[in-house]
Length: 450
Image (cartoon, rainbow, N blue to C red; front, top):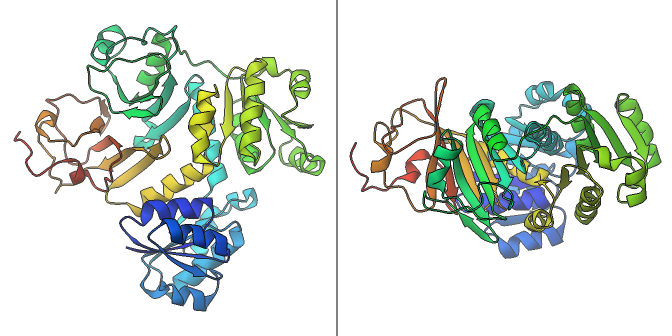
């Protein structure tokens, strides 16, 4: 596939890094330093210029392009790039559009500009944070099978009964209707078998039906609680989207914003939220605003270090759950090891959405976790799939690949060796350091017979 990416910033670079392994990728940007970084580290073609320029797009091979992705810092530029690219011959276009003012008109914009996909990192991040509020004790929450299956990340503490248990012993003690698909232990990422023992300080990724995940969390001492009061630090786009979502959930919202003019705007846009003009990293301000009574504190300024420090201060002062927005992926593990409950990365969320679209060989959903070192992929099984009607115990799965869940009509199955996969099933795969683009990639040619 021939792909043109306009914008070599954080998202553009991350996309190119993941797409150039199997596709011919060209990056367009005006910033020579950004292009130089991509050229030195990735197998891509770099062109200096504007993505709205017809001559630059023609030089990049727009007439032969299967996909144009516009992820510059300006919504309007992204829209014009896609419109121009489509007129010049690009088969498909994706635009990043972030401004809340466009949110109500996205479907109209998509139709008028003939866009194949629109991504909004801030809205997607807000959606993910709001979802996590239903599993308040989980570090991260992902959805599959149109919300019927959840994947949650849980930190193991010494007071939890899971610490020291073999995975084989968990069904008899807690529930057989969930699966622990990934264990993160320090720098190690483990796709576990039944003999693996869970240890204190591990992070585990648990997958299953939403109600079963909820019950499991209660049984292991991580009972989700109803959140009533949330404090947000930073009044940017995510805060606006998130405040509206939380208020729909009957959660009271307080926003701390250091810019006075921005506070006035927020007050007009969010009349039901309490807007405070002040520095959310100031411990005295947090204390005066009753941080100890907050069910959650979410740090979402544009500075990673400030978000991490403010979340830690809030945690130290009694906030029950703290979340930090992080742009640099190498900060994610650092933040979690310091005690931050959950980390959100709009860049990673956006990239996952686009990568899912690009690798659409029956890929319904794709989530990359742990700095992209592991993937959870949801496939819809087609009639010609090689794995249909074969018992799972007879499939020769590669190392570090597991079939985590099978969704068949109204049934959600945590599979065992005698289960089989049928046409039309939704199959959720967990894989470490693999490049799985279609379901048949998970089996070798010497598989067993049913």
